[in-house]
Image (cartoon, rainbow, N blue to C red; front, side, top):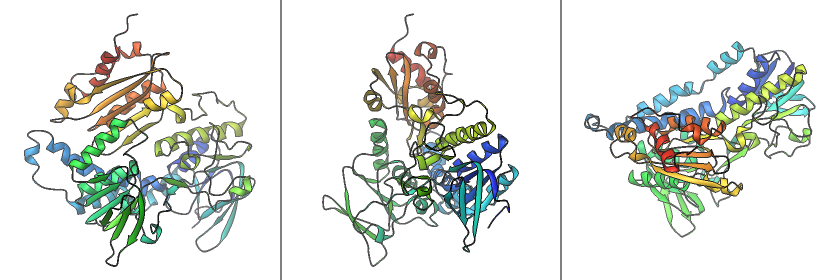
Amino acid sequence: MTQTSETGFDVIVLGAGPTGENIADRAVRGGLTAVLVEQELVGGECSYWACMPSKALLRPGEAVRAARQVGGAAQAVTGDLDVRAVLDRRDSFTSHWSDQGQVEWATGAGIALVRGHGALTGVREVTVTAADGAATVLTARHAVAIATGSDAAVPDIDGLRAARPWTSREATSARAVPESLAIIGGGVVATEMATAYAGLGARVTVIARTGLLGGMEPFAGELVTAALRERGVTVLLGTATSGVTRTADGGVEIRTGDGTTVTAAEVLVATGRTPRTGDIGLETAGLTPGDWITVDDTMRVPGSDWLYAAGDVTHRVLLTHQGKYQARAAGDVIAARAAGAPVSDAPWGAHVATADHAAVPQVVFTDPQVASVGLTAAAARAAGHRIRVVDYDLGRVAGASLHADGYTGSARMVVDEERRVLLGVTFAGPDVAELLHSATIAVVGAVPLDRLWHAVPAYPTVSEIWLRLLEAYGRPTG
């Protein structure tokens, strides 16, 4: 369905997820006209199959467990989760997989919409093929931006594709909770869905080739592993998957490299992402179909003066908030270049996505949560920094002990010893997500440790962890 009869615009955006929406919005705010091209739901993966439904599935279990960790409240919790109510609440956050509200937002923001599959067919030209086969050729006066995102990768494991595995989409949109669920993978999707489905009553097995949350500080994966096991999840670490079979009774059998067989009602594959670039005409622009798209920090494709990309499709950072950050830079710089205005493309300028390189914030909504920003200790050393690592037991902070009886958690800051600023911070523990933005400001702002001493945390809050980390590092003498 075409929402507009116009075919000429200043900017064409392929993909109407959060990244595409923000590119178009910023371009329009900059005085340009823009059109979104979308073949699925306006609002994209995050709204309907990722961020929102997954967190809606996780939050009820987290809330019940939090109550059970506080004396007085624990005695009031007398039952288990109402699974149907959890799924109904999840559905409300996806607007029951209707994008009408998002379409109304786009219209109100002055952004046009064309429904269908879009592909580059020339310089500043996109051909959109609707569901009925009708083709519409759109032309851009200034730029085309690709924000088509990514799909779940299904690895080449014997029998896996034939077994019709769940991906993150099926896991977050399931109409019922299976009796048992096997999860192949050890990253964010794997650990979050293990947490959610164990809380909803499923018997969960996680099969990970290495450890859990391998790209984060080691203690994060260790705490999450221990918590999952405590809740009855079977976690198989250092275990490869050699084959998968869908059985006659509808279940699955997963064969591991050590000869073990895991049986479950469903299998979820959560081993990474792949770009949605195979059929969008990249060859027209001299790029390779199916590849990630390389861009500079203004999100423009090198060698082109009109082609941009942002979000997952660039493989810079596969996180919704970072895609939106890139989109704001892209939309603004497209408008600036179109107007012949100055471009602020130095590091941390208005038209660049500098934070992508070493200041990315991320929360893993397991229980305990993991919140991190910037570089891990290992990444900082690999980058050649001379660092000092400071760890502190979060459970020793007064605010944490008030927050939950037997609070268990850990915090780490990675200090650049030459500049005496923070390169990275990681928290793991209940509700640490809300600590993250203070750490992000410290890292992005390169706030000197001597100045951080004057950021006094209120007592008794979990934020007092900042004082304890600084005390462990040592008071400045200057």
